Image (cartoon, rainbow over the protein chains, first blue to last red):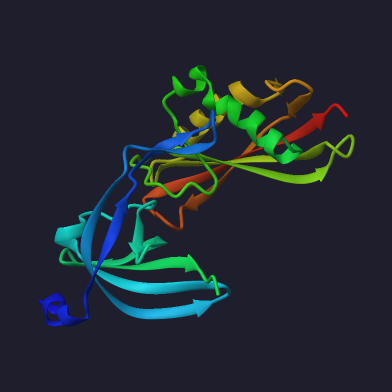
Length: 104
Length: 135
């Protein structure tokens, strides 16, 4: 409901799913069980620039994103953002911080 | 490769082995962010902290966090520590030519519930090492 009320502030972004399946000690890399992308609706509620990094807080619809995992990424206007831990998830709206380096 | 990369590769080769994988203990390194969907696993950290025999050598401590179910006493972490001992204590690891890691004796301490997941107990297994490279 809240998401619908704010719909005029939402934008379509890409959620790049990278579900991990463990760590391979023989080649020092994270194993991923496939990679896929979906377009989701997002509402950005806050932006902060600190110590060379930009943090944006983003609200996503749970029905669109299902579970957010540690190595998932957002792609916004062609720029990749890493995700921090999920801040809240009430079953309808997932709130999570997205980070990237401040390139200027 | 440099000494820290070689050190990491040598130590991690133990946990990449078929023999270790067959033990069934989920093993992750420091700075692994993925979900570990188990109530029992270990996390490997290499702490290089001391002088070595030469400029291409270093001593330090292999620190291994042992996570087991909270509230069930220390036995399971002791069993995993003994298992680690059988792979590490007194061993010389040298899968890479010209380099070796000499492991010493170990110790274990209980540190109580994990701060990130209090459903797990954290014990710390520590074993000093000397890493050396032939100049």
